[in-house]
Each structure stands twice: as structure tokens, then as C-alpha cells.
Image (cartoon, rainbow, N blue to C red; front, side, top):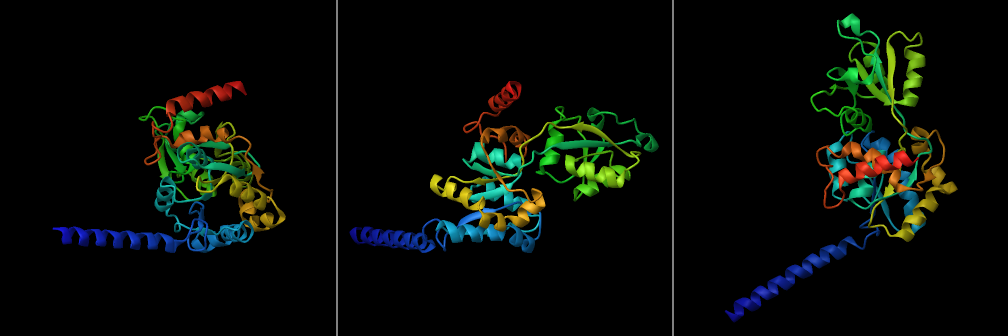
Length: 315
């Protein structure tokens, strides 16, 4: 019995040594073998993602003394992207304000840099409902039960639109599309009876695709939200977080973020996030989305709703 106990103890020690060796082999966090992970939504191909986000990780590796690696979840693979986000596997992320607010409240991320302009949604409807023997669409509520062209959830616009309809049995019918232009054309050409798109895209397409104002009507404009931002996770210490901000706002940072800013920020520099609480409201559109429900042990969603309402009242 004594020999068996000694043998078992030896095996246990061997397993612990092997496990510790494996951990050690990965290296300390921020090393070449165990870099900080930077990611973004799978909106583009892996190759295009590397072109846009890869230079940012490379610059931070060169300038901070820590290693960063850009990780693409796979084209249109939102499941991998969001599951890894919820599990806290990313150390730095650039994405939409609803995700920014969720991470800030639930997994201790800190928003550091955002796009310059505010994010404003516009809901549009068809002027031609009678042609299809349907009742006219004159206001937002008229879209209940009607076909709306949207991107698949968890797209921020889609979730924002659904949040405007409190009654779960009186919501629009979602028709999936890809691209804001297709959302506008879907309404103009009769595929859908409504859609939601960014204000800037609406103005652009209205001018080009419905200049006589015959087919598409503006039904609703949402109050401004903060825009997309970069957040930094809790594994990155404050000193490194400050260094990241400093680097990305430098001339080198402007160069590394050029393609990202051209696509989303009209080439303007990022601005520092002065108040992370501005992301509380957009995050609320996720509270009923599967996998992103608010854990009451971490955040009381009802209290957060009240706080958001109080903040808007005080403005």
C-alpha cells in the first residue's frame, strides 16, 4: 500500500511538472509565444482583415515592448467572434458601440479610442405600400408585422430597430440582406417595406437612388449614439493601456490605422474616450440577445436602464 501511494505521488508530481512546463512553454503574457490578441468583427475576408488590422498589431509589437497578434475569426464567422469575446479571449478589440458597452459592463474592458463622429440610425419605409395592397406606412409603428431589410443579428442596426418595438408579438419581419445599399434598394424596389441604415448612408443613397423622392420615406431618426471604438481588456495593465493610446495617436499610429480610419472615420484621427458610461445605452440592445444576456450578479439591467434614462434627462 505504501509503495502504491509513493508511485501515485510520483505520477502526480510528473503530471504537475509537465503541465507547468506546458504553461511555461507558452511564455508570459505579451511574449512572442503568448501575445496579446487583437480582433475585430468578421466583416471582411481574412486577407482584407490582415491588411486593415495587421499593421496595428505590428506597430504595437514594435513600440510597446510587448507582442500583439491580430486574429481573424473567419469570414462572416460571427459565432466564433462573439463566443471568444464572451469568454474574454481578446485583449483588444475594435467594433460597434453595443459590443463596447457590453464588454465595459460585463468583462471589464475599457474603451480608449473611438471614431470622431456620432452614430445616427435612420429608419426608412416605402411610399408605395398601396401598390402592394397594403396599408400606408407613415410612421415607425406602421412597420410592425411588415417586411424590413436588415443585416443578421447581432448587427447593431438590426438590434436597435427591434428595440424600438416593445411588444414581442408586434415586431417587423426580418428579411436578411448584405450591405446598406441593398437595404435601401430593397425598400425602393419592393423587396421590403422598411429598413434601418446609418444616416450618412441614407443621405447618400437617397440622393443617388431616389432623387425624385418617389419611393423611399424617412420614418424615424434615432438620437445619436457614440460610435465604434477600441477597447482594452483587463489583462492589459494601465501603464500599457496608456502606451497603446499614445502610440495609436502618434504619427506612426496614424499610418498604421490609415486603412481602418479611411473606411470608418473619413480619415480623421481617433479621439480619446472621455466617459465610458456613454456606451451603456447602446449596450442595452444586446440584453435579450442569446449569449449576451446581462448577468444579474454582475450588472442589474433594470437599474442600468434607469441610470441611462436619468443621464439622458440630465443632459
